Length: 428
Image 1 (cartoon, one colour):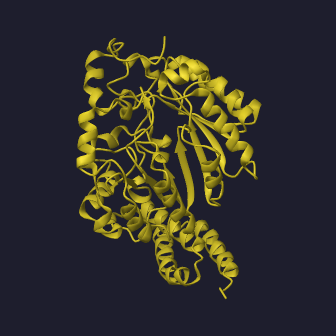
Image 2: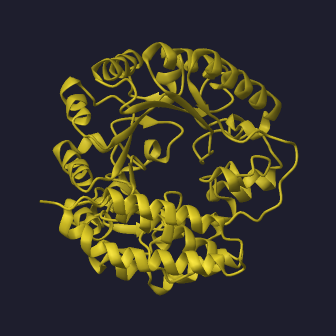
Image 3: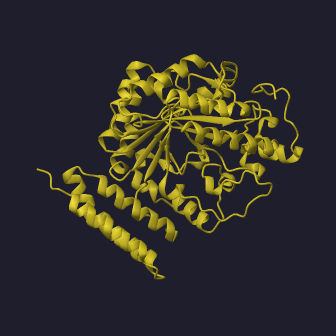
């Protein structure tokens, strides 16, 4: 018989409530020391009882303390893991680098073993991290459902370790059978569908290979098949550019009609294959107006709206410290570990799953990155213009809207309208 840990959990929660009231100069060190002691005390008990919820909570508190103190060598494990299960995709979206990948690039990824994430590498990380992990997000750089049963095996491993699951998809490969499998996951929290238009014409122009009616029908079916209207929660994500921005309020209406809980929106991040004029950096007033209209529409329709920070006409002061090197690594195809989901080049690799996660987590490269961020001198240029965290995102700063490859060109052209030979999203 498993012991009842409920009284212990209640006591721990009350203890942390007390720690939060401390205002002593050494309070951060006290929280760190208490959290470290509790994590070490309960790690063994969690393994024996199979009750990892308390360990996950304590690890999160330890992680928060280490981030606040700016520690570079960590005792805590991450609280979030972002997983890119594959670089493959069934669509060729014109706003995405995957959609413009050349045959030579495809051959190189396959030759280097970096097209898919192997289950063995995923399981190596799972063994070390999942007992402590609160959330796992699938969906970067490709469409995970192209992997079929291999992807469902990854989901099952997270489910078995009581990790909250978020899945992002273009919706084209889901059917009644796969939806039923997803609904069988009690720890599935969110399913996000990418939908960049409220009309067939716009959606299929942006997301080449998609079928608007099929995606809408899939979302409607998913919502109808849930026994609980909020579990999992459904989200529509909209990438906003100048030529599709006007459809955002209608996307909110569509979400409400389909039973979707949230609409999120992000500014288009311009790559070399998209004309610069598509960036909302060059249409700030219009962007603010339509985003505000979408937020009002969402409030009227009972849908949550998560939009990007508005343009304010001036850049904001720095000071934001990115938490990802402390709490949110990415595991990408090939089994490589990255400090976040924004960095993607080979020189951003922190290590490989087969080295052992704990070894990579505190290796010299990881510690150097954490130290540089604490000192506000990141040695990875992309960290200076990261658009991942809302707190650090400055919409009025141009480098937050374009890829590194384009930055010099954009600054040199002083906001020119872009290359007319690039594929357009529509008719601005």
